[in-house]
Length: 51
Length: 493
Image 1 (cartoon, rainbow over the protein chains, first blue to last red):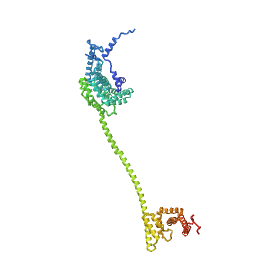
Image 2: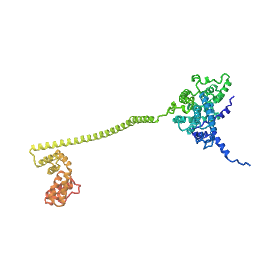
Image 3: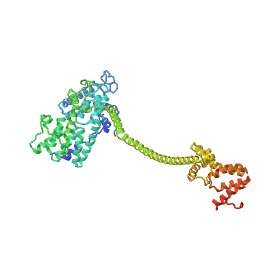
Image 4: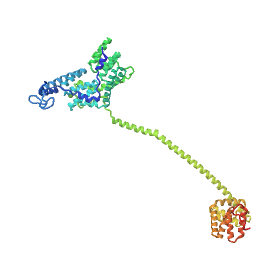
């Protein structure tokens, strides 16, 4: 049985033209290469003493 | 060999000299990205747009520089009515690869028609408003807004889905089913649409979800989509949808060809019917010409008649004024003509009388003077007329009344000349030049016998020259005719 209220909650507002720039920045996510570079940077840093 | 990530030279140990990444990992990531791109492409070819979106997003997670995957993802968004998301993907794609990138052409096609782009923007805003109405359970307003949204953006899958939900909520199963079938025409395996159709099939028990053939059947097989009974212009919307279909057909062809850059001919223009750019310059010229024609017509039909009427009225007023003035002048001319005739008649009478007198043998110096004076007057010489008539005493009882009247009329017309004799006479008397005074005043007193003062001065002049008898005659005349005058004299008696 369809729960109308729950189904309506699944719908998100559509992006408007004024949000195009934000949308572009939002889509500039990290890919595998970015993740590898980040991992390498962290591996090159000296281990921190948590104590 | 250059690094697949940053383009810097790769060292002999297969590590990038700049970013330090091992190229083996990057190649594996790139191959995985291509794998998901191919998967997304296959999904797109069978119109499984939801599946294509997922696969292409995964491809981009492995390599965000996969321009083909990004372009195809943009096309999937475009096909499902998500214009901003499509533009974002194409902008990023053209940023990664500025040259020979079909995304550049897609952007030109879409952004070339600002009116259409504004229509998509308005559709997105109205869709958001629709969600607000639905949350407030204001379904009538939501349906009205959805009608406008789908008119501006007929492939807006989410709008069809919310429309189907509202119909389901209102118990309108058939309309909900039509809306969902439209979703499946766009996105063949849309999971939400399939779920709702399954629920609808469970509600009435007689309908199945619908096969692929049902979904992609001819439009005539499906009833027209209706949002409300009051919206009978739905057919017009369907026409708009068909036009939109023409525009999208080209893009679908690109999807089915694989959306690869090499498959797209850069010189090929994407002919999009509804995206055809409006030639504002041509329209401006037409508007200018139409404006000029309307302006000239307005001047001839509105301004000129009023101006002509005003000038005609002014002419009529002027004509009336001239007519009135002309009538006055005519009256004056007629009056003067009457006077002239009257005087002419009197002159003729006098001439006739003089002639009769001459014929009777009584012609004398008085008559000669009268004749001379009248002739001089008729010739326009008033001075000579007065000088000649000065010898005639109008107080003389022997003159006939007609003669007296005629001469009086002439004298009255020569008042200025006659007054010169009076002035000269009085001046000469004052200077004790009595002879000259007598000469001047005698002319005046003969023709103006009722001036007591002039007669008194003449009498004094006579006394001055020793002509006592003439003086006494004049005193006697003054005493007789002007008994109340200040010039009455008794000393001579």
